Length: 245
Image 1 (tube, rainbow, N blue to C red):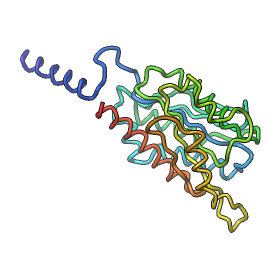
Image 2 (image 1 turned 120 degrees about the vertical axis):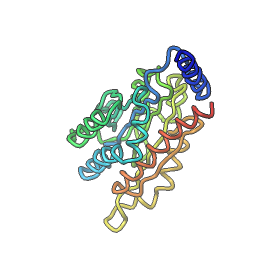
Image 3 (image 1 turned 30 degrees about the horizontal axis):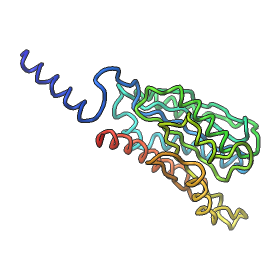
Image 4 (image 1 turned 180 degrees about the vertical axis):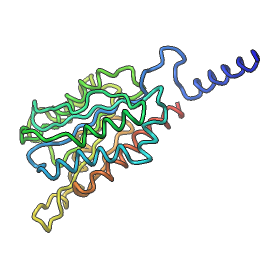
C-alpha cells in the first residue's frame, strides 16, 4: 500500500514538472481576466444591453463554461468594468474566483441585472487600460493576467493607448481587444464598413503581448458570438502555453 502511495506522489510530481507549475507556493488562480466594456456616447441603450447580456450568455456557453470550471482548485478569476471618459470607470464585478457552477451562475445573474448609469460620452482607451492595469496588479499571484477591452471606436481623449502600454505596470500582462462594428449601414450607421480600420487601430495602438489578438464583432448583435470565440481562445491558449513550458 505504501509503495502505491509513493508511486502516486511521484506521478503527481512528474506531472507538475511537465506542466511547468511550481510544486511549492503554487498560484491561487490560473488566470486573471479583467474585462472592460465600452459605454461611451456611441453606445446606445440597446447596444449597452447587448454587451452586458452578451457577456453573460458567453460565460454560459457550454465550451466556455467547461474551460472556466476545468480546474476548480486553481480557478480563473474574473473582474468586469465599464469605461468611457478619462475618469469614468465603473466596477461591475470585483475579482471573483469561478470555483463552481453556483459562483458562475451568480456572476451571470449580476451582469443580467446590471442597469446603465450616466457616463462620460467620450472615449478614453488609454485611461481604460490604466484602470485595468490597476485591477490586474491585485492578482500578481495568478499564472497569467489578461486585460480585455471591448470598444466601437478610437480613443479621443486622455493618454494615448500606445504610450500607456509602455508603462512598467503592464509587464507580464496581455491586452486583447474585441472591436465592434456598429449597426448595418441601411439604418444610417456606416461604422460597420470601417471594421477593418478599427481592427488595425486596436492592433497597433492597444493590444500587448506575444499572444495578444483582436477579435471583431460585426455589429453589437454579433457581440455574444465574438465574446465566446475570444474567451475560448484566451482560456485554451493559457492552458496550452503552460503545457508547452
